[in-house]
Image (cartoon, rainbow, N blue to C red):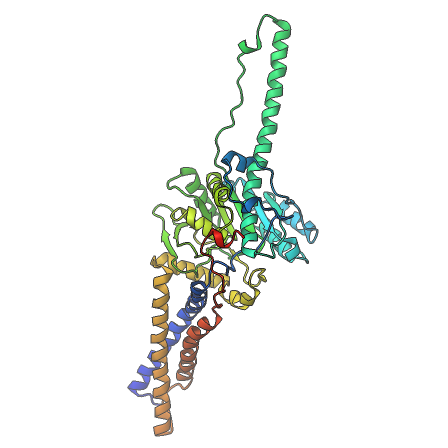
Length: 456
């Protein structure tokens, strides 16, 4: 078959368009749908975090009365249970008995938040435990169970994370108390022994070293039971996190092992000395999620203090963004993400969309684009939209030229499949924008403007 020069040019353009659309469509789908969703939703519409409440319900976390920080870290913890699922427990133990390929020595404590009444068949907790076993964390984890807050799911999530932080300090204080008592008993025994032989010696003359509990800043890892692996976990990433923590090159409050890249006003910046860590910057209202994050004790104290002063007034990701606007980092690439097929306890109407957006390759690709370009999502979305429109226009022109030639000459001297596929991608590319707007949830009637709106 003879191919004319313009046919070759059309075929070349069509192939370029085909490749371009194939590489940009997935990212455009994610940005155009979820970005619009986040822009029109208020803080009430979150789908990155599970929803929990203390069991039984407690108003301790919701009061705005001022309390000293010492009371915050030593107050009795809310009822929560460290438990293990009976389902596949033997398999998990067998798996964890082997030597883990990952070293998590920089993490002092691990907590897994779960909601038994939202997981009646224990699938969520069992899967989460298996994942933690596979990555070598099962022996460190403490499971914290909470009941759902059916009156306010966002508040329930907030309360569960606050409770984990308070419980951590309460457990540490209890352990330090036992250690102090043991030291005190040993000291008294030694003093009595010396006075038995030398009664003239007063106890005040005995030089006994008293225990001083050193100021530590331990690091804890908080996980939710909707966790999934991305396939990016590597020991080099964990080593980089350890070095970053130990050397304290930069002040940090949180290191996210999972974050949502589809939120407005998010900028991801590479760090100068650590290629496995990136810096996250976003405004309040752009929920990065709380599926998996490392936080140090000084940061937890700030969150607890804020809760003591103001009570619950915003979702936990927003509170973290408010307190730590420029000191949150993330592993690059992230080893975990919110499970795409895990049913949401907050907004199940978005489960289908979430299943598309949270596929591990797609999440990793978008995070990589943000880190490589350094562009904020506010800038990257318009660029993606424009690119889609250009690709759609060129693909449409190729299809139109092919149709005109076919009608006028009765034949088309070229590959009919190429303009057909180009036309399909053209329609699909434009459909992304329309479907993104259609899938965006309608704004709720109530707006979260401040503490007065939620304290009632």
